[in-house]
Length: 478
Image (cartoon, rainbow, N blue to C red; front, top):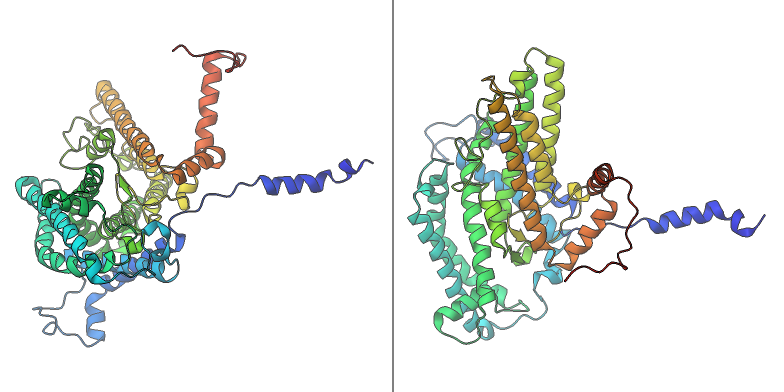
């Protein structure tokens, strides 16, 4: 028997091992998100048993400045403490285990340690640019009334919090900027360029200024929204009667969905708060394309188009899955389980970011968790959830036109999220790491390969098995 045939099985095994293509490294480790989940769960347990635990450790209402000891810590400030319990373990894991502060991507060289007097002039210019930026954001908050009403969310709570934090933040920024500037490889970042422009100094770059303003526009807009919605879901979770919700499949599904939305919002809030270079969680770039901003902003108040009465409201004369499947308990469990699964994917997609979640920004490329299956797990899962939870093609009015309109409008909403995904990819493809990840996904990931197969199958059905054209023999018209 020829040697080549004798060794064929062994060679095949070796070739299959060699052909296994490793996934590109993720900027965030899985355990960062796990640490955040553990911290958040700990505070939820404390909050649900706050009164009993306070008495157990010897605290009294008088010691805490309260008239009476609350049974549960379910207020808005308790919700913010939850963000601390969520973010704190992630910071510790990132620094102590993953040692992200030593990565070159931070732009920090801890070994150089310049003297304060050598960085002070540039630090002052940078602080001027930073404070000017905060002043612009504060002015925008003050001018537009929706931030001072509860029309969309509890924005007044966020505004009150920002007012209380303003002076301490300005004071703290001075030692922080000077300290960090001693180690930065490039001390003259966007804030410096803005400060130099304000001061009339030479050397400023308009592109650096625009990048700086875009990044702070993202943070200013979305952080206010996240803080405004943190208290509501947290209050519901802390006061949830677990024994009661397990008696009904709809209640159980909604309880689990609420819990995962709380996880999503808490992680997102932490992400917008901790855009810091020493954590390697800073904003590398904010999306420079207007199409990306439009696609994102129409999904959030006050620009949202999908809310009740909006042009993309697909809920007219609809009910929900619990209404249509009422009386079929087994089906309610199955359908509710699917919705819980989809919400779990959505929350997992946010947890995977660890400290880095934010819209319209590049803060490091994720390749782990659900991002090993699809580049847009949150968009896919939330759109599938909307279709299955609302079922826009079923209406209580009995009108076929209502059913058709709702279906077409939800198709348009899904189209908006496809648009968002495409604009995000256009932004991130400027980074070689994302290109490598996207190419790996196209070759290896289950969902992109499925859509490629589906596209090919549909193409074959539409156009038949036509012979392939030699692209080298046909030149495009110019």
